[in-house]
Image (cartoon, rainbow, N blue to C red; front, side, top):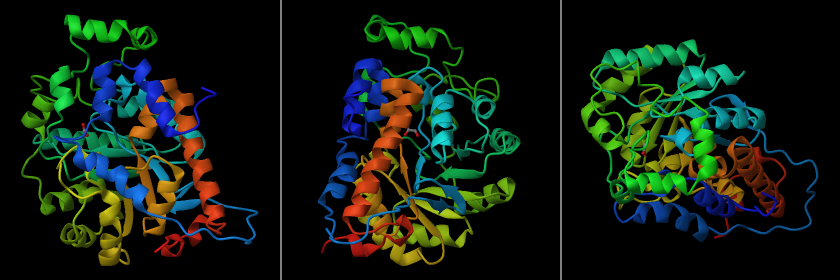
Length: 378
Ligand code: GLV
């Protein structure tokens, strides 16, 4: 991994190591993937102010997200099927995040369960909740997250129904994979992945199997979402879940100023400006283009975080400059995981930290807490 210098290198390495259907699952956006691309492209259009002859010693990236200390203002996003990028993926990524000092968020649609992740970590992680029609199951998930001492609940609001990702349909994505000739070929060409996967029992949706009733077809995410996710989820339900959870709450998937105002009124601790990595409403604006508008509207009443399109420490700095108190990476850590397990996730975090640190210094700043719109070139 010594030739790996940027997240793009990790992506190329993951592509060589992870079976196509799972690599594609992480890499895809909805329909034309226009919003997925815009998330990255709009970051690259933002220019930074170069400043000179300022003392660049003693720099600090430490900050807080919802009052919790972070070694840099970044968390790992909840991502589905993480344990299919690498055997026991969620457990490895959570350990890497813990050692690095940033939050790990476990997805409801993870392969390793809440209990699996709790068993290999010593500090609290965050849990992401999808709201299912079966409210007993939702209550049970919340209770399990409490028992595991999760220190925040991330409630996803932008996936009541699933956006269409063509690659998943073409690949016949499922977990565990089906044994058709196409899928056998995809796996046979990734022998290391197969060997590691054969050594773990965790190959299906660990939070759901054995916990949810009436699960008819769990292997297909699209069928399962259509059957189980609640398309009637409302702001009243958000209040109920807040009450049920009773701890720090983050609302994920806000992309509109009106929605941000409603989210701020719920009394949640933070919102995440997000379009689900371009995986839901193709044609929606990029997260970074909406961030300053949402910060202007609600930034003094609720903490604003963002995800979508972050591929470097420079992107983190730009998001912080435009008012985000925290940022999230999904694909960058998945590429690291696919490329090299826990060490790959640590490498992804180190790459981003180094880029963030050097960029901050070259903008003439020494403390991430002092970053504001000043560092953006007009
Ligand atoms: C699930 O969250 C997905 O985007 O696939």
